[in-house]
Length: 280
Ligand code: AMP
View 1 (cartoon, rainbow, N blue to C red):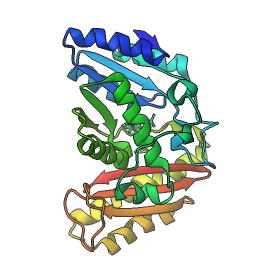
View 2: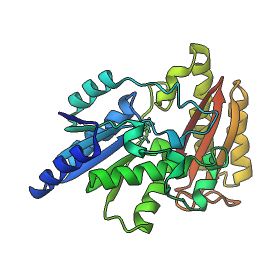
View 3: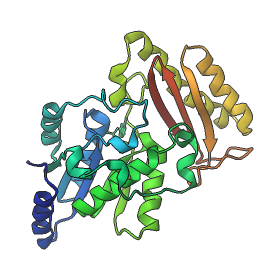
View 4: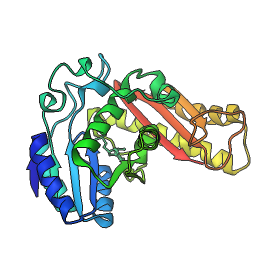
């Protein structure tokens, strides 16, 4: 397994691989890897010849009061896990390498209206920061395929849209959301929670499942379905940021829910912001 910190070094290596017509995949991450991330690496391994995993905690996707400084950084453990999962190349640049000058003083990608819905209402510049770093990683690594988890469903849709809008010839592959045995969606941020907060956090997956059950029993009114979810969450002490039922492509809401719609939730358990989703 090769580890690169420098953009020119990895570009040179990739151009050599391209000469032998290898199918190259990229799995972008911010590190502190868990089984959710590893499932992406394993899927990429099955679907390509060379798997690149990037590990970069991207400052421009964090808001001023968010957790950029305390975000868990566990490079040694991450390298072991990627090696075991069959990853071939790691790209882990510094912030200076990625942005050279002040990250806010550069050209950024401006995303569509979809970046201002759901999480975007509460994290105004987040998705522009995500799209900018992903476009940079795609230009550096020139993959044939790029893999994203459905855990961050809105992010996946925005990246798919970016690749289509900007005519990038890259296959954007969606990977299933991986949960712990008790239903909690795996996330690097779960480590911030106490045992009690973690138990409270289970109300997110319970809420989206209660909505799905009510929908399958025949309830179609979005207002009523949201009420079912909010009711489930009111049993715990989480602070709900939003719970929405939207079209899974346009991310727009309607009065009635339909099969294939996205149920998405964001809530705080203590100070930890968590998200979860399910497709009806
Ligand atoms: P992150 O390191 O949080 O930026 O995540 C890197 C990639 O892993 C993104 O495509 C995420 O959607 C994906 N990911 C994170 N958690 C999960 C999970 N529980 N299940 C599936 N994919 C995940």
